Length: 346
Length: 259
Image (cartoon, rainbow over all chains, first blue to last red; front, top):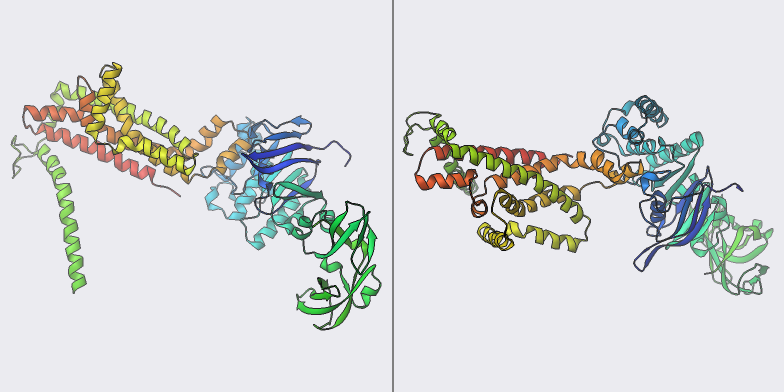
């Protein structure tokens, strides 16, 4: 991780008139990273990806790829290739011609184009469709061709814009697995945009969470999930319980309960805990932090049971347990470990 | 019963309307092959003589050459300029593109006589000598709107991701146009060109005002009518009819969206 970053974004921003689509951001990522840009629609994630590909001109800042400034280069001069949301396959060319297009434009000798197209079609398991036209293919097949057409250029960075948005659930899972296999098999640096936090967790080695044009947090899936830095990340990436608390002189205290050290500015804060980190009953006795409460709801979810508990201070907690035979109305101890909690500002 | 009568009435009216519209055309074609120099029924003999008489006239050949020149130039120029305009219009905001359509469409909506007079005054103010060039310029004003309409409609359902893809894969803007955009819109462009040519070929009013000297096929018909009703006019009419219908039919085939 100490190596020179492959891609470096410096104060990169995009404005449309007075509207800031992407606030100035700094971001580095490395060779071999599988990066997810995660956020709700309209958060600026696609704009960011298009700036990387050269389809949107940044208003400020710079993009460096492999140490070279590409900020003002058009798409055809960048060492990036993109898989577009609608795939953008050329309907008047066969699959073979589609995949070979970039190499032909670059003036690659014919024999080499043919050989590399054959290899690439084998890699995405589409050899049998080489002479078909794109409209004759299903969505998932078109997606494979779009991938092959980009990968054949051996891009330094492969960009994918909501690659699985148009596919149904089963196919989406199959293609996610396929993309993971491709990344493992051929290496390279992949950047994809998604609004699906589960997809980001599943595929990425590094996640960039965006909201309203700003980067909320950058980290591994584990860091994002277990140590969210903002209220937005806490709720966008999974479920979260919150307790109102107050921080004064680097000490966070929850009224009538407990206090712990946590550096940060004074003021109102929220203490967050994931539902599956909450312990109930006897297990709570061994926890760092404890409340007593009353079970108000029990929902059987198959793999786990979800309890809603009203705490003594009136707040509501959700707990997900592997099993349990508690019933609504039962009084119960609720607890969690210090290591499983985090503090954000509301 | 009532429904059956209603349907019969509808069919009858429809057929009568068709006869009313097509009959004159059929007559022109029939008389062009009739051996009598009087255009009356019954048509006695069958002859290609009127076509021969037409071919024998020098002014026919010069009119044909003029028509071919004008039509060809209009077809090419209207398509090139109209396509460029359409590519800009599809990128405009809805309000701007509506305004652009209205402006470009004005000559199409104006009565040809008014347009002809307006252009004649313009050229005389500018001191431009009337010639085939002024005819071509004049024809562009009312044929280009059709090209713009047709090409814009095609570009509206164009998948722009293919253009971004081509650029992304290393093609320059020009290369992208040549290898992706043009092949995809080519049938539409041919269709639009043929429609522009069909409109140009049979225009009389504007050509008549702006040609200065010489004839195109429609003004030749007018000239022949003034010297006497000769069945070789019917032969000429049939030729113009064939060219116009042929190119329009081809245009319709080409511009139809092929999913």
